[in-house]
Image (cartoon, rainbow, N blue to C red; front, side, top):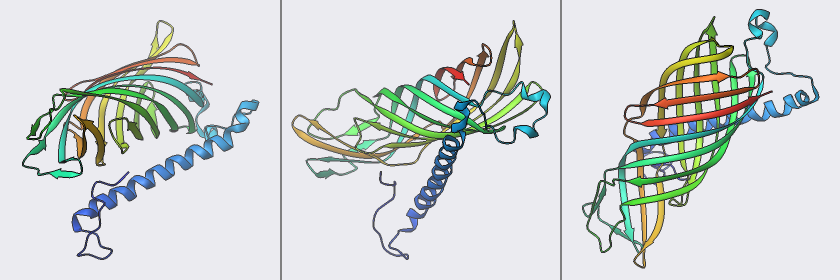
Length: 297
């Protein structure tokens, strides 16, 4: 995966153009996040091995939690399956197009935006490292369609009205959580790599979400109702190749969410200490619906 501004240059030490420093700082920050998340997950897997022998060691620091509150805490380990449906508009920058290796001038090929519909099925494994800190890893399959291309093109070939794609997605993440009585608040961040057949590079995405709400008993079940916000950041340049009418077409672009933030609401029903079902919807510029069924142990 090549950073969006990674190319040789001159004028400053190291042969880096001034406009590249933002990408370099972002790359360093991103890698530090990934190193810490991956290290944490590895530590959890190594240390918590004894949990399967009946001696639970997680979360660390549980003895510091008042005993009256421990019964309301989730079991330390979890697995879940999730389905996510998203429609959103992506703004396009730095679009480049080539035909048989010859670059088409920007005045003859300009892509400004497109609409994206994505469906993802992922599996997640997680563990509470601390009473307020959860670490997790995800992996799954993604399908989607790009439509409504706002494209100005003067070239010897026609462009289809939609581009279906499919591929895989993997990621790591963490959640900070806290509360007082029935009121709770959590902050979630994860980083994913998505590889689809339409691109030669992976799509790397940083996602953040903040959620707060109320958790209580409803007809003998523990139910949570919450609201919050969701943010999506795509930080890389995507590149791909395809063939139209016997011609080899190459392209690169920077796709960004036109509406990075959107509000969300959701609910979770716990059917006991082990099973839970979550349904969440997002609206505004980005529309999404997520369902998740999980098992804790």
